[in-house]
Image (cartoon, rainbow, N blue to C red; front, side, top):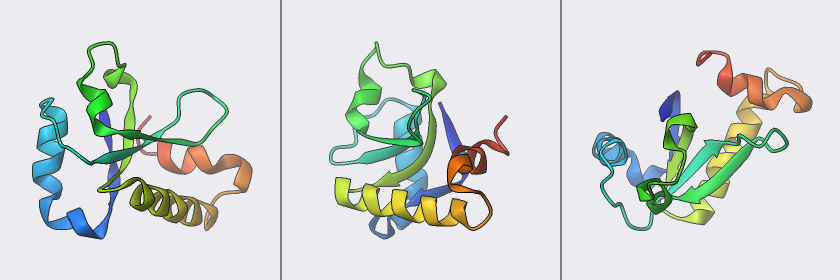
Length: 105
C-alpha cells in the first residue's frame, strides 16, 4: 500500500493524521474510517472502502494507492469531489487518473 503524497484528509481527522496512517500501515483497526483509493478496475477513477477491509488477509493491500482518509462515508464523498475538482484544474475529464499517478509511477 502506498499513500498519495498530498493525501486528502477530512478536517475532523487532521490532528490525528499521523496516528491514523501508522494504524493503517500496522493493521490496527480504526472504527468508522473510510479510505478513498485509486480504483484498479480500469473503468472507475476512485473507490471508497471502510478501513476494516484492509485487515482481511485476502484484501490486496499491496496494490492500493490511498488518496484520502475520512471519518464518514459522506466525508469521503466530499473528499472525492475535491479530488476531481483539483484534477480538472490541470487535466481533462478523460485523464483524471494521471493527476494522481504522475508522481507515484
